[in-house]
Length: 136
Ligand SMILES: Nc1ncnc2c1ncn2[C@@H]1O[C@H](COP(=O)(O)OP(=O)(O)OP(=O)(O)O)[C@@H](O)[C@H]1O
Ligand SMILES: [Mg+2]
Image (cartoon, rainbow, N blue to C red; front, side, top):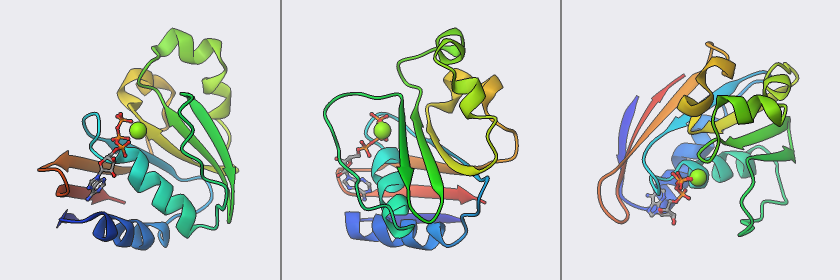
C-alpha cells in the first residue's frame, strides 16, 4: 500500500489503521531518512494500541518498552552497530515472541532482526508531506 499524506493528522490516521493489523509477535521495521517520521508514526500506533505514557524525552534511548494491548519494544539502532547491539542484549530482546517490536535503523542490526516483518517505508516530500509505503 502506498499513500501520500500531507498533514500530521493524516499520518495519525494511517497509524490508527495500521495498528488494527498488529498482532502479538509482530516485528515492524520503519525505514526512512532522519526526520522522515518513523518515531512519529510509531508513537501514534502505540497510542492507538492503548499505550498511555508516551513521553518524548530528550534523553536518547536505544530501547524503550511500553505496555498497552501488547508489550512493545521500540528500538532505535541509529547510534549502534551489530557488536554493540549484542553487547547490550538486543539479540536476546529480539528473540522474544511475546511482544511487538518497532525498529528504526534496522539495517544497523539486520542479522538480529527476524525475517518475518512488516515494513513501513517513509519518504520525506516536504515539511508536512510524506509518502508511506506499507507492506504488511
Ligand atoms: N505528515 C507527517 N508525518 C510525520 N511526521 C511529520 C509530518 N509532518 C511533519 N512531521 C514532523 O516530522 C518530524 C518527524 O520526526 P521523527 O522523529 O518522527 O523522525 P524519525 O524518522 O524518527 O527520525 P530519526 O531517524 O532521527 O529517528 C516530526 O517533527 C513531525 O512532527
Ligand atoms: Mg526516530
